[in-house]
Image (cartoon, rainbow, N blue to C red; front, side, top):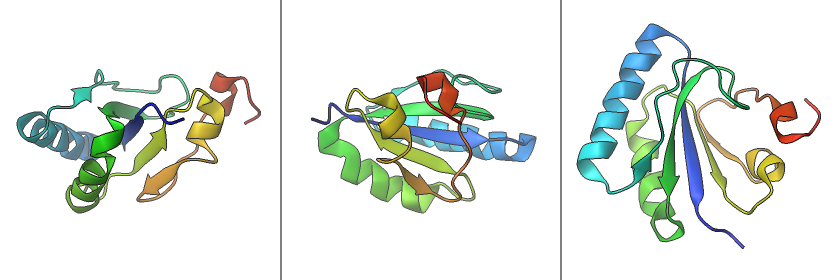
Amino acid sequence: MIEGYHAHVYFATPAEAEVARSLRAKLEAGFSVALGRWNAGPIGPHLCGSFEIAIPTMRVGELLSWLLLERGELDILLHPLTGDDLVDHTDHALWLGAPRSLRLEAFGGAS
């Protein structure tokens, strides 16, 4: 069962961080979704700066469509929340932009 979705917006350079800040501001202004904290560097399985968008299941289509048009050159990982973090971040993952490497050992799996 899918409890919701997370989108992880990645940035590795100062220029990407500025685009990500702009995207985050647009999300805050236009949507009632929960935004995770701004991570300036690696955290958990994510190897560069990022922030998370918590998306209710009923709104995933709307937010996915918007992110497709508004993400610019940013890479975004979208995954369901099924209770199996490793599988959600790998087998069930959808990438907007280029797939990025993840530190899978953060989930107890192989890298």
